[in-house]
Image 1 (cartoon, rainbow, N blue to C red):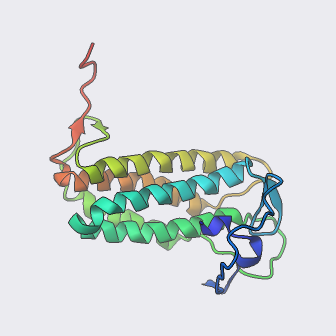
Image 2 (cartoon, rainbow, N blue to C red):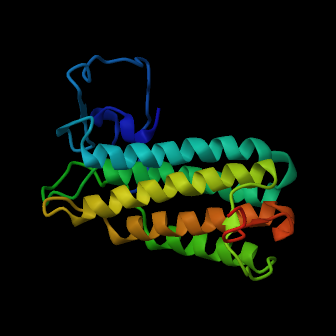
Length: 212
C-alpha cells in the first residue's frame, strides 16, 4: 500500500516529521462506493485525474522495485540511488494526495522540495559521465536490469503526463518541484539503463527503416 492510498486520518506530517503509521486494518470498506479520500479528507472518484496521477507514481515505484531485483547485487551504486528514489516517490505520492486548497490544515503537508530535484540531477551527471555520447536512439533491452529500468522510465513518463494534465486544470495545483522531479526521474532512468548495460556498450540501437 502506498502512502498516497492511506486513509486521510493517518496521512499526517508535522514539521516535516511523519507521525507513527499503524496499519491494523487493511480493508476499511470506505472505498466500496468507488471513491477514495485525499490527504485533506475530501473524497474523489477513484477515476479522478489526481488519483490517477498519484496511483501511477505508485506504479512507477513498483516497477523500480522490480528493477532492483537485478541491480541489488550487480550494481550497488545504481541500486542505492534507486532506493532513495523509491522513498522520494512516496513523498511525491503524499504531495499529490494533499492538494493546495488555500485552507489551513492542522499539519504541515509533505512536499517534494528543490534539494530532491538537485540530488537526482547530480546522480544523473555522475552516471552519465561514464557513458559515451549516443549517435542513435536506444531500444529498450540489453541486460535484464536495463530492460527493467526502461520499463520504469516509460511508466514514469505516463505519471508525468498525468501530473502535467492535472496541473493544467483551473481548480487543481501541482507544485513546480513535483513536476521537476518527475521529469528528471525519466532522465535518470534512461541514463541508469545505459549505465547498467555495460556502461552503454550493451545498448541496443535503433536502426531507422531496418526492416523495410
